[in-house]
Length: 253
Length: 253
DNA sequence: CGACGCGTTGACCTCGATCAATTAGCGTGG
DNA sequence: CCACGCTAATTGATCGAGGTCAACGCGTCG
Image 1 (cartoon, helix red, strand yellow):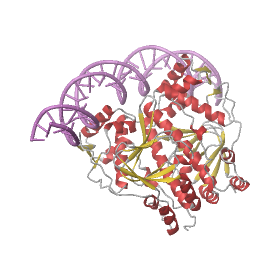
Image 2: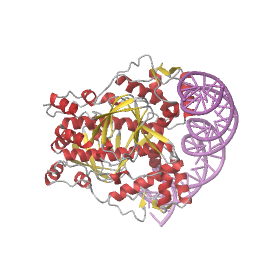
Image 3: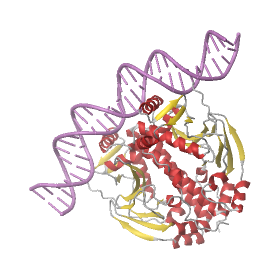
Image 4: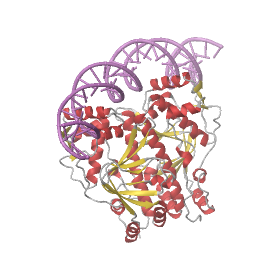
């Protein structure tokens, strides 16, 4: 087997993430920092939340890489989303008593858990933070609509190209050096479960992209050799890039 | 052509919708009511928002039926969501200057538009409303993950069954009498664009469900004859049913 | 009346699934 | 160090769900 030597070195917190597109007041920063909840370490494969579990937690991935997914009764799995350091999830706890999805670690990871009542409390006192969190959520929502369109309307090759570009962009955003390629932190089966394909067909599509010269593979390392054509093949749009909260003229204090 | 005689008679507002799962204080109710924005009527097929349009609006469907969708460059369309009276959309305006998706009317419809700064203002002053809106959004998010799993991992037959059940439940929630079946407010092409299939195959799957005795069709009217088996065929879960905000102990005023 | 949009059906083909066998990398215990 | 065993990657052969193309019916509207 090819070594899955993936480690996100950087740790990213709630504050880092929200601060990315909203400059925080000292007061807001303090409120978020005081929120620091329980920390939990997870081994590869460990399940943090199981579908239908009773949960009241909100959480942020500190380091590592995780995924959220649902299982169908025939045993097949649909991966909904990959989670990188700084990513927030579990907002569904705000609406549901039981989790609509499972969350598990894809490699050694650390997460930080927050109780929903505390989160609600902070968001109530700091409306700008609430809006920032909403904005984060909207960005994820947009990414999800792209995946939806991908599954419904694009070819296997396009979906694989999209997964590669998406992973690269998200890894880069965590501070990973990705210029000369990156180590695929996923098995081909996992890529398949994210893109609605079988592991076998994922393999064939990777080979095809390689034969076409769009990517280069060295073991589990991937280089996006011809990004322009890869992007075209994927019909890919980077959603997180376009977030714009400049209209938000609420008092910064 | 078979008459598409669909009309949502009931009108539902923001207040109605949020009031469904959160009992509002007079103050909150008033704030929402004062928010009533510009009203716009749309004919079937009219496009309210086009992808990439600059938008700063938030809106609520008052009556009729609409859809949000994205178009791929090869001309194919993925319908992301159907919108019924009381449904809120455009929350992406909170994060983006340009709309990530298009929105159009599926029949004569009326929508109510609100400027995002006004909405943000009200949500800031009434945190419980902000949380309620977040909860609504989470419910839609959960529905979207189901669609994602459906597209990625289920058969054509299951997807069609899921669309039928989803439409029925949402129509019922708007107050439509749906017990003895309902008029399909969509063309088979639209059903296909929502489920990632071609119109031709949608037709075949409808026939198949009919032959299996799960549904009965009379023109464009559909009766869900064997709901238990239909539900099983669809792997269907009604997400909006389980919303629970009882934990929210913020002062109700 | 003719054009058009939608539904329906049949014939055929393709993409991706399935089944099966082989190979590669790595960890383990001896 | 080496033999064994595990997991993942790879490749070939075959199958079938769903797409594509084409024809036709039917109701509506100009």
